[in-house]
Length: 99
Image (cartoon, rainbow, N blue to C red; front, side, top):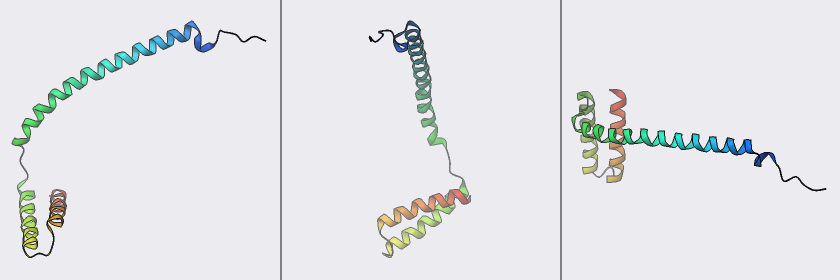
């Protein structure tokens, strides 16, 4: 028995399917590239706006009070500097959640 050299994977139709698939992938990659270029340009514009953003006064007051309490605890050697940084992050999160 001889094996057939003709298989479904090697047929002209499958080669055509592979070619169409490759062209579709190339088109998709191009569209992603074009969209990424626009997005990257927009990131710089939004980054420049960060200086104009303000924190809500209630949130700022909450954070100032809690940060002052944490600083007092550090001065009294009740907590370490590392613990103070963690406490400040927790206080910041808490103030944003409550206000």
